[in-house]
Image 1 (cartoon, rainbow, N blue to C red):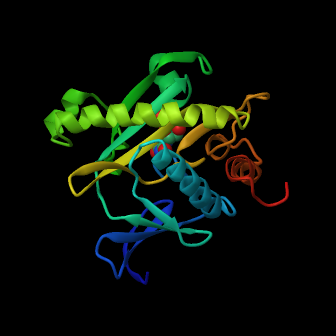
Image 2: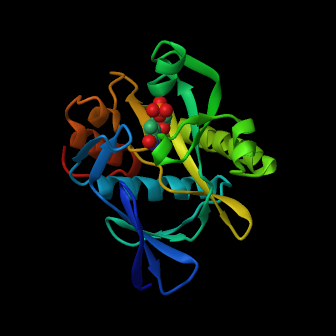
Image 3: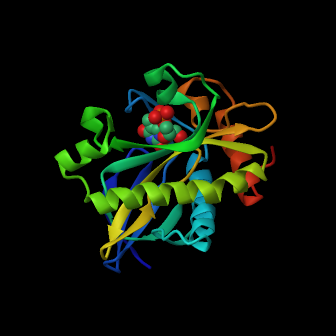
Length: 239
Ligand code: TMP
């Protein structure tokens, strides 16, 4: 597969076309941003961790019956995927109260959410990715009602598959964000699943093992990413 023109550069990834019209190459950068890019930095080897962790989880999910854009990992920082038309809705699943949910509703961080909560955010940087309801999705014509239903069902299926996987690795899957795309009329999981897009807490210490360490200046950010790589893929730099 030959890498073609740069199609798009996002905050954490670059997307390249290939010599195959239906294939894209994702390059995972070390750049880190938070609070809609008001805070910027870099996390050494984050791109390697996010690429390898995402690849591992996409394969796990495919095995569990969730179609994804993943085709193969091409190297430390690159992944070959199907080309999709991204649905501009970020789907967040929450098992424990944290982050914007705690703030918005005054709930206590760490409280369990049963059954898990699904939230939709409008993927729009200029607006700061606002929380939206299904009625807003209809108003903005972001997706058909049947697609919205499927987004929610798929996101909950992903949660059901990931919860035991992380539990077995001493990690609490607090919450995570998914993006989906349409590929030949079928909804498939896209983007990435990584410490940038999930909250993981260590089961014993309850310490954050994800991008919250960067967002909140908690220190040992790179170490946390390497630890996630070790626990998910069984590899990583010696810690
Ligand atoms: P939130 O609590 O800030 O709404 O975040 C919910 C989940 O979504 C959390 O696992 C982090 C992830 N997330 C992203 O992947 N991208 C983002 O831009 C934000 C704000 C959150």
